[in-house]
Image (cartoon, rainbow, N blue to C red; front, top):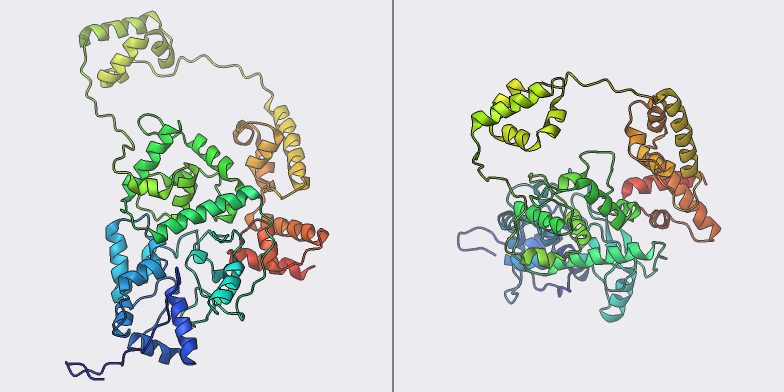
Length: 513
């Protein structure tokens, strides 16, 4: 076919398979290829897009305008409809500004700019999508009975989704890679999927929390809403935390309480399954950094976890029109007293209490100190003695003996943690302190030299802990006479099904059994 400007143009395709509800475009193309009996990917791509292009992404396909232009004349399908209903972009842009979301959609439609994954920061994100396309065995069975075929659903590819919202059963990994370059289009059939439902070993509360997460994630993909800028979202979180008593009136977060409440609400097992463990020993763990007004990428998974912890739906966030957030103190104070008289009184106080340090002077001249410190700070610093008259404190604690006692406590705590029945707990200074029944001083007091060194030496590296957890899961499953596969072990141990690093560890451990 020759177009008006004389250039050669590919013929339009004769038909397009019916797009099922929530079906990925990748799945539609795979079904088209099978229906046409095409073996060559190159021929199929040229047939569908009107030109030979390279498709590099399962979740964020590009060249969509070319695809739409090559559809039959009767087709009313648009690039916008494909993006909104048949790709993963709505999920990943839900918490980004309208401007960014539109620019990424244009990129997909016209194939401009960098890969979408790069623009979203997914390459460096610690929350990673599953490496294999996932499916629900119950949906698969139902599709074959009703449609005569099955297809790849977007909802099953949501990062952090472990259950099918419709059937409440565990999702499974297919054998189809979702991350390969130069895609092969493979349909969801009996060669790569099956109807076997995985026995659910997760506690009921973990299942309930994950189903709520999936429900909220599906809302992001299937509804239209007014997107918010990041500062608005941060302020929204601060307002809700303030209502919960976890932030001051000015919006200062009581971060220790937030952290404790978050971990207690979800449990470490669930957070590990969601790739969002909170390391309480890190001052700048992801949770502490999350409600700071910076430009760093935040995974939609963690936004949803935060909203769920606050007991708020995404709909409530997006329907909110006004927020307060942090309140800066801009009130201008006007001195009501004569500055010279105030100075005289402060000098008199210093003279009468010669030898007192600043804290002691502050206590004896409370209102006067506050006034001078606020309105005459430079003069205050010149005339007020610093802490050089402090009386030496007598330290009656025998720290060597205390260190030995604490060391014994720490050793006992480690043995208790390692020998505890049930799912293993990672040995860390925090867990040792907790098991010993002591406060934070136990792992932070520098006088406890031997104790601190022992806890640091005893701390399990993450892979060592994972191996211990894997071995525990295998032993438990063997005692219950359950069939053992790497995937089942992964779920039983509470890792979730999408962590390929853990899967490799499991396969190594299994070789030794």
